[in-house]
Image (cartoon, rainbow, N blue to C red; front, side, top):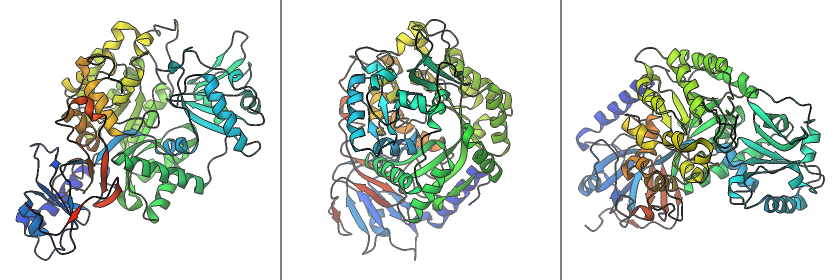
Length: 576
């Protein structure tokens, strides 16, 4: 279904308004009885009035009652399933506002290198995988981070020596650097004479030879030779990723860099009735995807897969990542003199594609981590957005990790949405200050400064860079501590969020970030029946207990898509 790029929000509001009018005063008349009723729990609507209804009723995938138990009883019939929450907590369905679905699926199918403690450990894992891999095949993995090792330096191809007849391609945890072996370099013709591509860097040794580390766009020198997954493999990857997302309570995600094959796979999965995750697509603007992007811009914003997939945003890159020193900084890295980082997309590309998107009703979402990267794209947005129209267009900056204090104020002024990931702070805090120094760190991971400036903060994880578990994100936002409770009191604790603000980032603000606030994000009559049920009340327990919370039920469109254990069902007249 094609979406009107300008009147989308108005149309959604009219649709919900008509729905509410039809059901006004609970006079549902001859309408079918409700499918589900949830009761006997702590239900947080996250609406403007912060209501806590005693029961919620669902029919046809929509919420038809949110209020007292008696009202839900009046709408019930003999086939209604009554779900006794048994004191558990029900939230609007949690949404990750920035993740990578294909990468998550691939990481689940390949070597998972998170938590490795040395290059030698990674080599052992690769050697074990090589024993079972077909001759001549590529061995891939993701998740290594040299900052977690005793020697916090990039590894080299020599650390992967002796792998045999396999090319090895291992992505760093942030996806902005890769570590390859000598066979991969030789196979792809990467030598001391190979020039650094625009927006990328080949790390070289003292002799000028490539070390096996390729930063940002330099990774394309090797990745182009890796065979694409077959449609069957891709469907398996995405299905696995979707199930994993549901299991941690996610009902939706914003896919930062959707490609043609991902959309095709999501439609195949939907036709099988297995698409149990709302996917908001930011179309990839990488060089290999520009033809696809051009065709999608011409087509205009639209829905696919029965409305479970929305295509109305694009993804650009202002710079690289802080961990691999590719984030673009206004001044050199404090721990790498002379290095200002990398601007990935040229300013001309940022301007050209943003302008095309603006004209065709698409939202622009740009990756920017360093203070220079953020300023470059803010300048581009300011030059293109019509006066006072920024809030309507809802252009976004993804990550906003290190931002000059004066630029934080510009986000609200321009109507630009800062889309942030709380767990990045608690993963990076061990080394981030060394990268940027004591002054610039004051504008890093600065959630409170953004909130106090009047901004809404859609929150996510950037999975698989971080775990997709949104409860871990809420914990990080509220405590600014790692899972061991370090440091005492939190890292720069003045930037902490409240529980309500953090939950709002995964619900109401995530919905706002994709123009869906009239359709979901709160528990209100007329909205989609998307819920996340957890085993404790995170609004009332100590912040440290949030980390221990477990998802027991995930509901998407009135359909239970994940159930940790059998949830008690009662007859239509529950004891009160």
